[in-house]
Amino acid sequence: MSPRSGSRLRSSETPAPTPSPPSSSGPAATPLPSTPPAQPSRDELAALAGLLQAELAACYGYGVVGGQVDDVRRGRAAERLAWHALNRDAVSAQLSLAGQATAPGPAAYALPFEVDSDASGQALAAHLELGVAAAYADLVAAAGAPRRAAAAQALSSCAIAAQQWGAVVQAFPGLPERNAEG
Image (cartoon, rainbow, N blue to C red; front, side, top):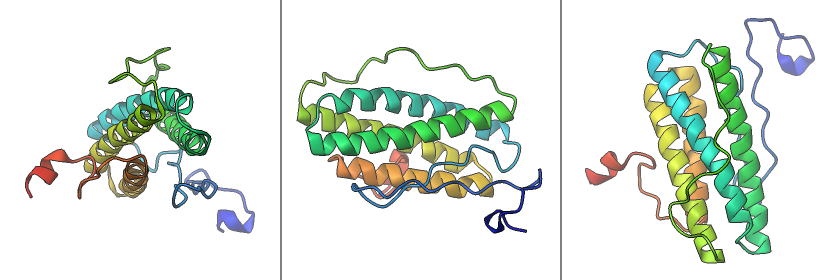
């Protein structure tokens, strides 16, 4: 029986991810499931650990962005912060379920540049999204099929968000070596 019919999930079934609410800044982005589809490989674990660090940094950074941008962009920043927080928690859960210890991120991060205006807040948001996109690209490369699809969808969401914040997004977001090939 499917989870939609109201039946209980058997221990071997993985619940479907809950879609996020529609966003005014683009198509709704579904967060990653918190339950891993299978025991991750060593490469997947490394990619998940890197992704967790990127999501932690994005959550911190969006707090800074929200304090600098105008009211309309502040709403978009809050939506992206919520999305990244959901994914941070899902990745942390996947690592924990795989037996990997996870530590909370640092209390503060060094920003890549001074953020003191609406324009620099937008630039930081674009920078954050491109950084998380690169971490998702690493996961896409390392993951097995069940996790790869969700990671690719998240990569796409980050690339769209980066573009909405003003970044020039390449044909292969998160893969600069592919973009250099032409």
